[in-house]
Every structure is written in structure tokens, then in C-alpha cells.
Amino acid sequence: MTTPTSELGRFAEPSLYILVSLSDGPKHGYAIMTDVEEMTGAPLGPGTLYGALARLERRGLIEALPPDDRRRPYRITGLGATTLSAQLAHLEGFVRTGLTRLGGAAR
Amino acid sequence: MKALVRLYPRAWRDRYEAEVIDLLDQRRPSFRDALDLVVGAVDAHLHPQVGSAVIPWTWRLPGLAVLAVGATWIAATVAVYASGSSSLSGTFLGLSLLAMTVGLPGDYAIRRGRAILAVVGLIAAGVVVAQIAPYPVAVVIAVATVVLFLAGALALAAVRAEIGSTARWALVVGTTIVPALALIPFALGLLAIDPPVLTIRWLLLPYGAAWILLGLRLVVRGSQSIVDPPTGVETALVTAPGRSA
Image (cartoon, rainbow over all chains, first blue to last red; front, top):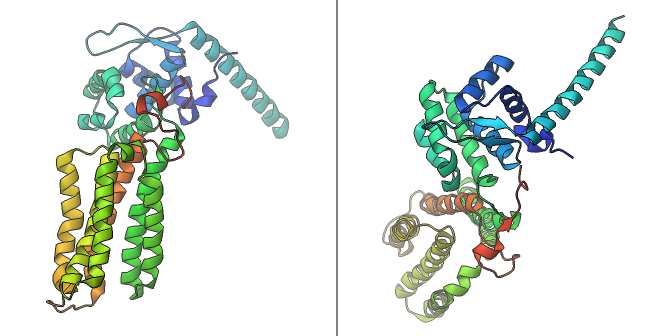
């Protein structure tokens, strides 16, 4: 059983964004922040970003790599990738259901 | 903006401070970022993710009780000022004593048992002497006894909140002894009271504010409560990775 990000309370959504951001390769904090902003259009505050990073790291969903000066890159772990995959599949099913119902209502 | 990072717990800063400072250096932080950092700092204290120590919820109780002391003290002062009578203040001050009873006991009370017993003895002696001494000595002793009780309780709360000795003395002298000295001329009738007693009650508001400050610090840091077993801090902390969100 993987750890769902939904148990992270108000950090669930930022955590999902971070996992998606890291799914194409390691990134440090600022790169994650700008990437998430490009994906969602909404800025991720520094307190929220590091609150979510700390939770993801503690749960083994991401891991820190050796720092490059003051920047420390993070990468998604195997558990993190499995969790993200399950979350996205769940969301995909949810979106499909919603669109189907919306289409049915419009007809 | 970078100063806000100092609001975070030591363990958190050891792990993430350099990264966050680097991040703040790379973008122009907004007011929203500042607010986000402050909220994040509160969260980092309440739900520590770095290190293995998780504070049990019962350890928040002393801080909540100390907060209640401050709130009831301020409510009593405001009630007297607003209603023009002291009947409500008695209720609030009674609640304040109840909250002190819940909030102050802890294992440190055993370590400082002799000092606490000495103060309690002095207060008891002051109550007796104030009953039999002639005026105006009785008034001075009565005020001194009340001040000793209030200052002693506040000092205990400050010890429990792990305030340094210099700040502890400043807090006790500034919010208890100085206002009490200002009250003595009124209590002895040396100064006319106009408007009546109500105005000088405001001198006591800082005392309630001091309890509020100590309560906030205690809630964040956590401290052994009377419902916890009498063990040391190290053994009472629970190792529970992933327990708090």
C-alpha cells in the first residue's frame, strides 16, 4: 500500500505538484517553484514549498541529493513514483467520470 | 525577509535554511511570500518533520492553560472597566486561579519544590500578618502578599516556558512589581482616585499580556502536563515518523 498524498492535509496539493515536477528529473527548490508555477499558474510560497518537501522527504517519496553550494536537488524515489502514478490514475478516472457526466448533461 | 527564516525551529533551520535563503535570493519576495514563511514557521513548530521527536498533544495543555490565565486576567480587567463594578472580575479571577492550577504543575515543580514551598509559606504568613497588623502596615503587607503570589506564579510560568533569567526578571518586574508600586499610593489613600479605581486597573493589563506571551511560547514548545506520567523530557518524547501531517 503506497502512502497517498491526500493524508498530508493542506500540503496534499502542493506535494502532488512537487512529485509531478520531479517526475522528469531532479530539481532544487527554486526550479521546483518555477516549474510548478508554469504548470499551475499559481505561485508556490517558500513556506508551503519546504513544508511539503519536508513531508515528502520524511515519508520517503522524495530524497535529497548532495548539495551544490547552497542548492540541494531533490529526486523522486521509487515509492514516490508509484504513489504519484496511483494518484494520477485516480485523478484520471475522476476527470473522465466528470467529463462523461458533463457531456451527458449537455445533451 | 530572510530574518523570517529564524522563526523556524533549530532542527528545521539546520536542514533547510541555506536552501530557503538561496531561493529567496533568486526571486523578489512578495508580502504573500513573507506571510507564507510565517505560516510555515508556525506549522514547523506544531508539526515538526525534521528530527524524530514528536510532541504529544497533552504537552500543549500547559500552554493552553497559561493562555487561559492571561485571557481571564484581561477579561477581568476589561469587565471591571466596562461594567463599573468588580462583581464580574471575581468570576474571571477565579477562573484564572483554576487555569493556573492546571497550567503550572509539572516535573520542574518537584525540582524547585523548596523555593515554591518558601514562597507559599511567605504568602500564608503575609495573609495572617495583614489581618493583625495596624493600618497602614496591614495595607502594605496585603499588597506585598498579593504581589508575591502574582509574581511567583508568573515567574513559575516563565521558568516553565524556559525564558532566560534576565528576561524572566524583566517580565516579572515590569508587569507585576512596577504596576503594584504604582498602586500603593492609591491603596493608602495618599492620592485621590479620579476616575475611581477603574482606571488604575488598567495597570494590571500588562500582567495578563505577559501570561498570553508565555502561553503562546509554551503551546509552540510543548511541556509536560499534569496528565502525563512523571518522566523526563527525553523519555516522554515519542518517536513516531509520519505521525503528524
